[in-house]
Length: 377
Image 1 (cartoon, helix red, strand yellow):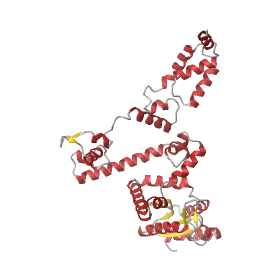
Image 2 (cartoon, rainbow, N blue to C red):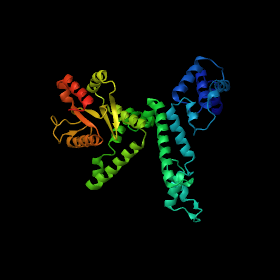
Image 3 (cartoon, rainbow, N blue to C red):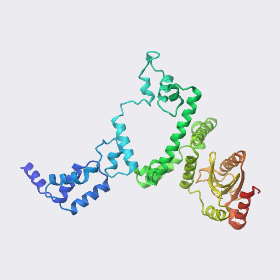
Image 4 (cartoon, one colour):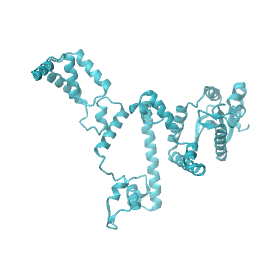
């Protein structure tokens, strides 16, 4: 009796309930907003009085453009209404789950379990690492395996790396802002994409930005060892940046400035006046590991915000800048090292403080213009 009653209830469902049942059975893993759009369209246009008929309509109307590929392919998710980055992420996660027990030639463990034909024994860790590297064209080992000399292999690996970087920069420049934000742990969109609330995402960003600093290294490893660890990381980061093509360096550094809000209202005002007289002026010029505010030939002008750079006329050396999480003397040390690097690289540098600019903008703009044209302070 109970079973008959349940079947009868199922038969007596209204049209909206039948549509809901049909959509969720026919199209799996559909993006929520797209699902609602389909439901709305079906509810507004009466298809039939049974689920089978509605299901056939859905297949004919919506499934013709859905990818037949599996869930480990981004196209599967894209066709179901998911945003590009989310589609790639879902596909990657699903692929990892499918192939989690399968080792790749790009992994060290793959070769450690193989027999080296030269010794008839399993690869040693050193030889396994060599074989792993030999699978990737940006490594010297790849070209050595193809019979090139060491010198030729190093050149070919470097060319391939540059090509990859340029290709990567081109691909990156074609991506939407949302796509790029979803990739960066320093953006709230990254964490929201992974199920966090906006408030939690902001907290995650805050923690992420403080995971590596000179102070944290010293606290973790002690003073001497901490400084060594910090310096190795900084040198590695700079080498990585320097290996990239100039166009990619410019993009990275401009993005850093844009994301941290370093372009002030006063700088825009200065630029407006300079461009009208000096159209060839370079803005945010990348030199080594630094991005300079204004440049013309070998002359550079840096605009220092009083708080951001802790103007010595206003702030004591022991003042703690909460925004940068550093003491004033540390900020001064960094800025001095930056200035010395630029000067050693053959540039003349003029520092303009926010406080001085505010006192008399016209005179400061004139001084900046004269310096950029002549290099004279």
